[in-house]
Length: 216
View 1 (tube, one colour):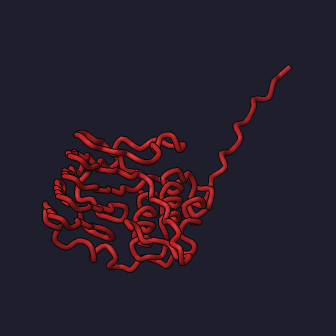
View 2 (cartoon, helix red, strand yellow):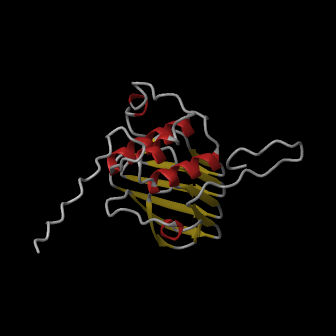
View 3 (cartoon, helix red, strand yellow):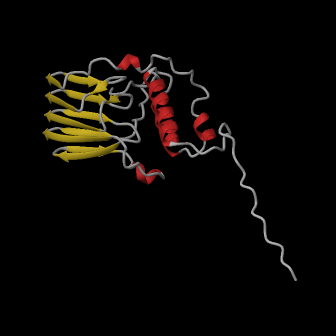
């Protein structure tokens, strides 16, 4: 008896514009950039920024990415140009004062912050890293310095007086790619601390019902 050969089933092709289409690393990067810009513009609060960054990093389909931008306006054509000016100085020193950096600021490859009997606040969640590896030297003498870094960035620490707060990305269901940006923190704290926060902090409620600004 002749046996009719089994015919291969045709492969179902998903249109490139379908929500089911698998996304590339470049498409994830585009959404991550827009979420960072929206956070810098004040359109997203700390919690929303954190949630959308992590969702973009773990997105597998176009639909999962698109939903993160549905309530955000399209980026202005010159949005990136606004932060491509000269990089800030490589040093910031505060004597009985404070060092503060936040919003859309360009971080040089090597940056040193020194605080003497004061405070430091380096918010890098919406910052532009100018290279794949960024070296932060943090010196806190009888002071406390805080560094906030966004999800999707590998943090390496060496030195003394470091307090690292937050959840490792790999425990949240995804691994950072090998080419993820790296922030290397070299710390020296004397009767003080350098605190690295890898998740945005909650804004505590004030007695009048309002919420405190970051760093307060």
